[in-house]
Length: 335
Image 1 (cartoon, helix red, strand yellow):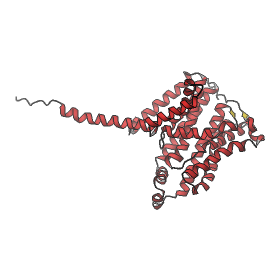
Image 2: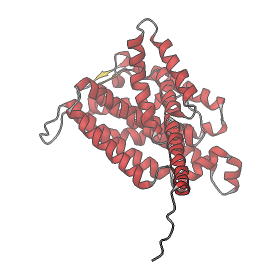
Image 3: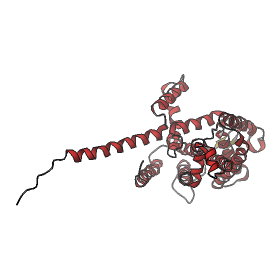
Image 4: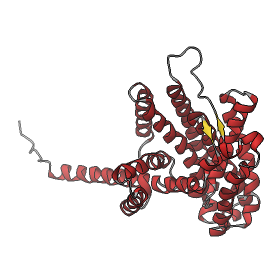
């Protein structure tokens, strides 16, 4: 594993590169990277639930939609500043996720997956009935916010920095949560919930809280997406979105914080590459990419990088004794 200092250097270098992108890329490419960060937040939320806690979900696209519509309605109907809509979306999705997690405690495995799948099916249809608030099937058209304080940034650049800032804060909070006492309890429930309960872990409470926090992360991602795309519609949050988030979580690496970034890059750019390779059958090409990635990297991209790092360190450690054994010894000289 990387040392704390090495990880800090890698993170700082990645942030330096990320901060330089808005001044080197076109607005379209910048929008794509903004979507990568938004997907990364949602995937991290799903990873907390599935990778760390072991609860399988096929319905996180519903929380993504709820967060997006909360933000859009507050901006369009009530003229609330977009910055305030992001935490509100997170808190409301936390409550909805926690309440949904309570009855879902009786379900496990495929039964829980089917329950969350029904949520992903129902929410887009429900949104169409409240036309006064949601705009019905036509959705809501928004305006991209401009940079404040007279900053020399266009809306795409400003939203990129806002999304990057939210990503850094949420990843820092998630890392501290998962590496602390709460995170150990969450993982213990995944590994053996009977043993965890015997050690005093309140399995029901932690499962519901994990579901709520996971939904909150996904809701924040949805709220950021509403501002970045400047448009929300029920058909944009279909079941395929939930499946895409799950694909990103698995490809990036389950039970991995950095894997959310790699998974977000995969679901954002690989479908575009598949479209460029074959316009007649892009999803067939995408399926081939999935098979290749899962065959070559069964533990995800983050897991593959971790294994390569461990092997590189072992080879360096093995070379040090060999170099010492083969080093020529100099005979002492007599005066």
